[in-house]
Image 1 (cartoon, rainbow, N blue to C red):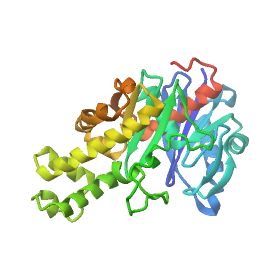
Image 2: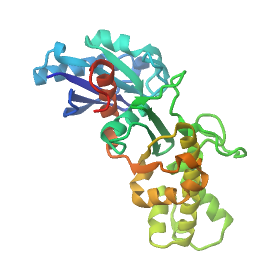
Image 3: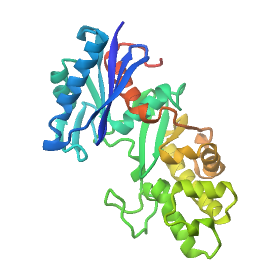
Image 4: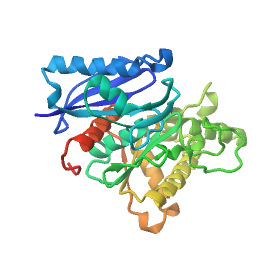
Length: 320
């Protein structure tokens, strides 16, 4: 039997998974992300964690097909990351650097892209070959899988759907420095902005007005019990997401769109709300796109990273 590792590097913790070649997760654990000294200890710490896992399970390196690594930065198809601000890294050749430390083949990609690969393989997109993952959290993350393969892009920025420009005259600036990005409206932060604006523009009574700070969860909860203003905000939000995702689908033409992140916890009402408006905006040839919720949660990154290693070094059929 052969084995492999899926590793998801975050700003606070590094998540690691040890898998069998068939995709069975044998162990998952976390180690702290040491970002001191420009993150110089991160890759050595990962290599030490890999060695420890091999020792615990009695596995020799010859039985390991490779390591997949997801990191929070733009990674090109060679596995070279061009600055990870959260980690303090400059330009790093991840396969070469971690490969030398761990004594194993390494494949690397952006963390959102490997999460998409994981969801397509074992999560909400399972059974499909082309998928868009949209994670609706504080911002909007994304990843695109086409014919079973991640879209890297020429500069490692493929799948950055949250920064598609959607509005042209917004005076507020997105975290990326631009204005009018999709995540300014479609994220959890975005729906809170919508609520604030709606309350300013209307004198309609609402429980939302009594809250010190209105969150996405509050809006969905109040909408579910019939708060009229909350329902109006949700309809505006659903229309925006439908227009935004229609724009993505006209370019990508996926079989399925999978929604993750904190907002996706709204569940079926979120899917129904988007689908209510989606066909109004999408190109007719894409009107059979399916919608589903992400299923892997915080494990999407380790599953996708391992799948990246499996595809890169496993010599197995990618359709599995």
